[in-house]
Image (cartoon, rainbow, N blue to C red; front, side):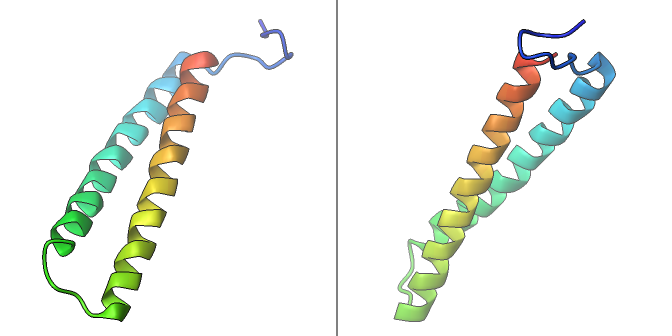
Length: 77
């Protein structure tokens, strides 16, 4: 069976594993996000503020990718 784009659905056992991994990734990203937040509560020099900003940007990108992955699995399984 395929969807309207001709893509076969993701087998349920694969979808379940991807969901589990995505959940674990979300938990790991939450630790990084909270650590970055706590760093924002202390005085940082200019370089450290730039590194924290880079960290925040990377976490936001990873979170968005993870959300898109979950949406893709939900739509295709």
